[in-house]
Length: 152
Image (tube, rainbow, N blue to C red; front, side, top):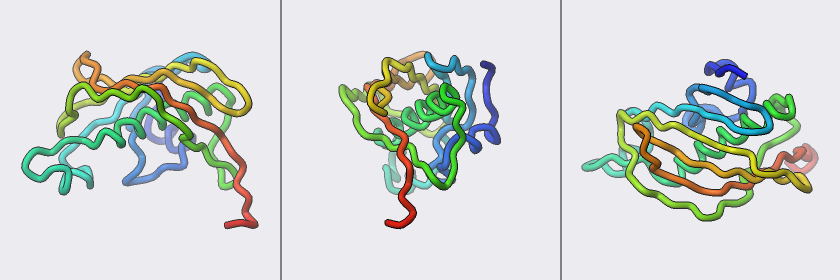
């Protein structure tokens, strides 16, 4: 499958500003892998406090961006679109490593590969790159759940 623009991404993900962390999908091979982009700008709301004298993208947000890319892969694999009756949860992370800081002006390349699916859980191997250098890597676990509107 070819890439996706922001409008197609918004059809897949329920996230919106300031939590939408995928700007574009470069390529998506449903059931296998995805490559997406997050353009990191000084206008990001977290840079005012992390850190004013040396802005660095928080590692947890890089992991979140990887999980969002994995969610798009899952939705494309199962031909699912976001709706008000379901939610895609990030349920686990293993072996996270942060190898280099991500700064304003960087283009974060998000890579996720589907490793397996069992009992409603998807497992991914994921890494983020800046200028062909791995900056973050992790194994992610995610699930899709129906929202019980009676409990909300």
